[in-house]
Image 1 (tube, rainbow, N blue to C red):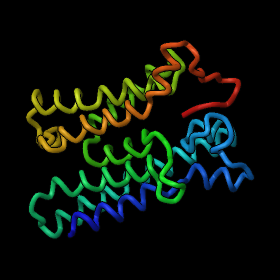
Image 2 (cartoon, one colour):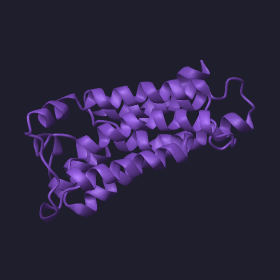
Image 3 (cartoon, rainbow, N blue to C red):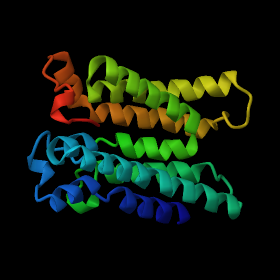
Image 4 (cartoon, rainbow, N blue to C red):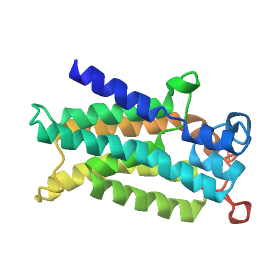
Length: 214
Protein backbone atom coordinates (compact mmCIF):
# COMPACT_ATOMS: atom_id res chain seq x y z
CA UNK A 1 0.00 0.00 0.00
CA UNK A 2 2.88 2.35 0.83
CA UNK A 3 4.46 1.74 -2.57
CA UNK A 4 1.17 2.48 -4.34
CA UNK A 5 0.75 5.77 -2.47
CA UNK A 6 4.36 6.78 -3.15
CA UNK A 7 3.98 6.00 -6.85
CA UNK A 8 0.69 7.88 -7.16
CA UNK A 9 1.99 11.03 -5.43
CA UNK A 10 5.19 10.93 -7.51
CA UNK A 11 3.16 10.48 -10.70
CA UNK A 12 1.06 13.54 -9.91
CA UNK A 13 4.17 15.61 -9.17
CA UNK A 14 5.92 14.49 -12.35
CA UNK A 15 2.82 15.21 -14.38
CA UNK A 16 2.87 18.96 -13.69
CA UNK A 17 3.26 20.36 -17.24
CA UNK A 18 5.55 23.30 -16.58
CA UNK A 19 6.21 23.78 -20.29
CA UNK A 20 2.50 24.08 -21.02
CA UNK A 21 2.01 26.48 -18.09
CA UNK A 22 4.91 28.65 -19.26
CA UNK A 23 3.43 28.71 -22.75
CA UNK A 24 -0.01 29.68 -21.41
CA UNK A 25 1.62 32.48 -19.39
CA UNK A 26 3.11 33.77 -22.63
CA UNK A 27 -0.20 33.47 -24.44
CA UNK A 28 0.55 30.42 -26.56
CA UNK A 29 -0.34 26.72 -26.55
CA UNK A 30 3.05 25.09 -27.14
CA UNK A 31 1.35 21.86 -28.20
CA UNK A 32 0.32 23.54 -31.44
CA UNK A 33 3.60 25.37 -32.07
CA UNK A 34 7.07 24.20 -33.11
CA UNK A 35 7.53 20.50 -32.47
CA UNK A 36 4.39 20.40 -30.30
CA UNK A 37 6.43 19.13 -27.35
CA UNK A 38 6.07 20.62 -23.85
CA UNK A 39 9.80 20.19 -23.09
CA UNK A 40 12.41 22.90 -22.65
CA UNK A 41 13.68 22.75 -26.23
CA UNK A 42 10.32 23.67 -27.73
CA UNK A 43 9.62 26.24 -25.02
CA UNK A 44 12.89 27.96 -25.82
CA UNK A 45 12.08 28.04 -29.53
CA UNK A 46 8.64 29.52 -28.95
CA UNK A 47 8.93 31.64 -25.79
CA UNK A 48 12.63 32.53 -25.76
CA UNK A 49 15.81 31.56 -23.97
CA UNK A 50 14.79 32.69 -20.47
CA UNK A 51 11.58 30.66 -20.46
CA UNK A 52 13.31 27.65 -21.97
CA UNK A 53 15.83 27.64 -19.13
CA UNK A 54 13.05 28.07 -16.57
CA UNK A 55 11.25 25.07 -18.06
CA UNK A 56 14.41 22.95 -17.95
CA UNK A 57 15.06 23.90 -14.31
CA UNK A 58 11.47 23.18 -13.20
CA UNK A 59 11.32 19.88 -15.08
CA UNK A 60 14.64 18.88 -13.51
CA UNK A 61 13.56 19.86 -9.99
CA UNK A 62 10.31 17.89 -10.20
CA UNK A 63 12.50 14.83 -10.67
CA UNK A 64 15.22 15.76 -8.17
CA UNK A 65 13.17 16.95 -5.17
CA UNK A 66 10.79 13.96 -4.81
CA UNK A 67 13.69 11.48 -4.99
CA UNK A 68 15.72 13.35 -2.36
CA UNK A 69 12.71 13.53 -0.05
CA UNK A 70 11.89 9.84 -0.53
CA UNK A 71 15.49 8.78 0.15
CA UNK A 72 15.62 10.80 3.36
CA UNK A 73 12.23 9.61 4.58
CA UNK A 74 13.04 5.97 3.82
CA UNK A 75 16.35 6.30 5.65
CA UNK A 76 14.87 8.07 8.68
CA UNK A 77 12.11 5.49 9.05
CA UNK A 78 14.55 2.62 8.42
CA UNK A 79 12.23 1.08 5.85
CA UNK A 80 13.08 -2.39 4.61
CA UNK A 81 14.01 -2.61 0.92
CA UNK A 82 14.67 1.14 1.03
CA UNK A 83 16.45 0.98 -2.35
CA UNK A 84 13.08 0.35 -4.00
CA UNK A 85 11.49 3.57 -2.74
CA UNK A 86 13.60 5.88 -4.97
CA UNK A 87 12.99 3.55 -7.93
CA UNK A 88 9.25 3.83 -7.41
CA UNK A 89 9.52 7.62 -7.11
CA UNK A 90 11.64 7.94 -10.27
CA UNK A 91 9.21 5.71 -12.14
CA UNK A 92 6.32 7.87 -10.98
CA UNK A 93 7.81 11.27 -11.84
CA UNK A 94 9.13 10.18 -15.24
CA UNK A 95 5.88 8.47 -16.20
CA UNK A 96 4.02 11.54 -15.00
CA UNK A 97 6.10 13.79 -17.25
CA UNK A 98 5.78 11.52 -20.29
CA UNK A 99 2.09 10.70 -19.74
CA UNK A 100 0.76 13.63 -17.74
CA UNK A 101 -2.70 13.10 -16.19
CA UNK A 102 -3.33 16.84 -16.54
CA UNK A 103 -3.09 16.94 -20.35
CA UNK A 104 -4.83 13.76 -21.50
CA UNK A 105 -1.86 11.51 -20.68
CA UNK A 106 0.48 13.22 -23.10
CA UNK A 107 3.73 15.00 -22.27
CA UNK A 108 7.43 15.38 -22.96
CA UNK A 109 10.26 12.93 -23.55
CA UNK A 110 11.39 12.78 -19.91
CA UNK A 111 15.04 13.80 -20.36
CA UNK A 112 15.20 16.72 -17.89
CA UNK A 113 13.00 15.01 -15.30
CA UNK A 114 15.02 11.79 -15.55
CA UNK A 115 18.27 13.74 -15.20
CA UNK A 116 17.00 15.48 -12.07
CA UNK A 117 15.81 12.24 -10.49
CA UNK A 118 19.04 10.41 -11.30
CA UNK A 119 21.18 13.26 -9.95
CA UNK A 120 19.63 12.48 -6.59
CA UNK A 121 20.34 8.76 -6.75
CA UNK A 122 23.59 8.42 -8.74
CA UNK A 123 25.08 11.91 -9.10
CA UNK A 124 28.54 11.02 -10.48
CA UNK A 125 27.29 8.78 -13.29
CA UNK A 126 24.56 11.30 -14.14
CA UNK A 127 27.00 14.23 -14.26
CA UNK A 128 29.31 12.26 -16.58
CA UNK A 129 26.31 11.48 -18.81
CA UNK A 130 25.36 15.16 -18.83
CA UNK A 131 28.91 16.01 -19.86
CA UNK A 132 28.58 13.50 -22.72
CA UNK A 133 25.29 15.16 -23.68
CA UNK A 134 27.00 18.55 -23.80
CA UNK A 135 29.96 17.36 -25.85
CA UNK A 136 27.77 15.54 -28.38
CA UNK A 137 25.52 18.58 -28.62
CA UNK A 138 28.47 20.93 -29.20
CA UNK A 139 29.80 18.65 -31.93
CA UNK A 140 26.61 17.86 -33.86
CA UNK A 141 24.08 20.51 -32.67
CA UNK A 142 21.29 17.95 -32.33
CA UNK A 143 19.50 17.98 -28.96
CA UNK A 144 17.85 14.64 -29.69
CA UNK A 145 21.10 12.90 -30.65
CA UNK A 146 22.81 14.18 -27.51
CA UNK A 147 19.90 12.96 -25.37
CA UNK A 148 19.88 9.51 -26.97
CA UNK A 149 23.63 8.98 -26.57
CA UNK A 150 23.64 10.29 -22.98
CA UNK A 151 20.72 8.02 -22.06
CA UNK A 152 22.48 5.00 -23.57
CA UNK A 153 25.73 5.87 -21.77
CA UNK A 154 24.25 6.28 -18.29
CA UNK A 155 23.70 2.60 -17.32
CA UNK A 156 27.07 1.67 -18.84
CA UNK A 157 28.84 4.34 -16.79
CA UNK A 158 26.97 3.44 -13.61
CA UNK A 159 27.70 -0.27 -14.06
CA UNK A 160 31.38 0.37 -14.79
CA UNK A 161 31.72 2.55 -11.70
CA UNK A 162 30.17 -0.15 -9.54
CA UNK A 163 32.51 -2.86 -10.88
CA UNK A 164 35.74 -0.81 -10.98
CA UNK A 165 35.40 1.47 -7.95
CA UNK A 166 35.07 0.34 -4.38
CA UNK A 167 34.14 3.64 -2.75
CA UNK A 168 30.66 3.51 -1.12
CA UNK A 169 29.67 6.70 -2.95
CA UNK A 170 30.06 5.01 -6.34
CA UNK A 171 28.49 1.66 -5.48
CA UNK A 172 25.03 1.31 -7.01
CA UNK A 173 22.68 -1.52 -5.92
CA UNK A 174 21.74 -4.05 -8.60
CA UNK A 175 18.02 -3.14 -8.56
CA UNK A 176 18.91 0.47 -9.35
CA UNK A 177 21.35 -0.57 -12.09
CA UNK A 178 18.61 -2.63 -13.69
CA UNK A 179 16.22 0.29 -13.40
CA UNK A 180 18.73 2.67 -15.01
CA UNK A 181 18.90 0.36 -18.02
CA UNK A 182 15.11 0.25 -18.26
CA UNK A 183 14.81 4.03 -17.93
CA UNK A 184 17.46 4.50 -20.60
CA UNK A 185 15.46 2.30 -22.97
CA UNK A 186 12.27 4.29 -22.30
CA UNK A 187 13.97 7.63 -23.04
CA UNK A 188 15.45 6.25 -26.28
CA UNK A 189 12.10 4.78 -27.36
CA UNK A 190 10.46 8.16 -26.74
CA UNK A 191 12.94 9.57 -29.28
CA UNK A 192 11.86 7.11 -31.98
CA UNK A 193 10.52 9.91 -34.17
CA UNK A 194 13.75 11.86 -33.75
CA UNK A 195 15.81 8.79 -34.62
CA UNK A 196 13.91 8.44 -37.89
CA UNK A 197 14.50 12.11 -38.65
CA UNK A 198 18.19 11.77 -37.85
CA UNK A 199 18.48 8.80 -40.21
CA UNK A 200 16.64 10.74 -42.92
CA UNK A 201 18.67 13.89 -42.19
CA UNK A 202 15.53 15.92 -41.56
CA UNK A 203 16.06 16.54 -37.82
CA UNK A 204 16.26 20.21 -36.81
CA UNK A 205 19.65 21.42 -35.65
CA UNK A 206 20.16 23.91 -32.86
CA UNK A 207 21.20 27.19 -34.46
CA UNK A 208 22.68 29.82 -32.16
CA UNK A 209 21.20 32.78 -33.91
CA UNK A 210 17.69 31.31 -33.60
CA UNK A 211 17.84 31.24 -29.78
CA UNK A 212 17.12 27.54 -29.46
CA UNK A 213 18.30 25.10 -26.81
CA UNK A 214 17.34 22.12 -24.70
